[in-house]
Image 1 (cartoon, rainbow, N blue to C red):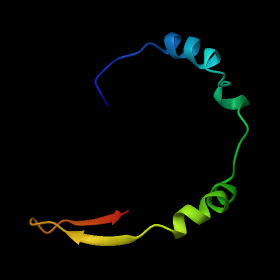
Image 2 (image 1 turned 180 degrees about the vertical axis):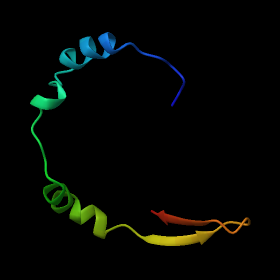
Image 3 (image 1 turned 30 degrees about the vertical axis):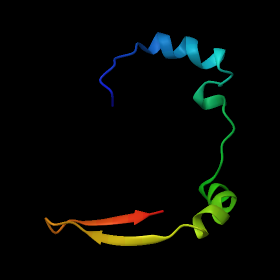
Image 4 (image 1 turned 90 degrees about the vertical axis):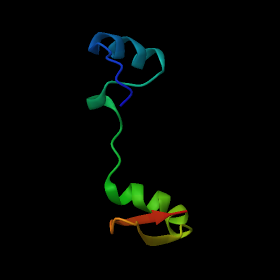
Length: 62
């Protein structure tokens, strides 16, 4: 997003240093488990729709 290119080998070196296992070896969380663990925060959010001057509809939360 910032336009900075990073080689795959750099990422390969940084992840183990940060204690992050390679993707296939990470523990997996199902979508249902994730939603249940975040339910309190999701229910506490306020969702609303805003219409911009150009007519675009935006879904917002706070």
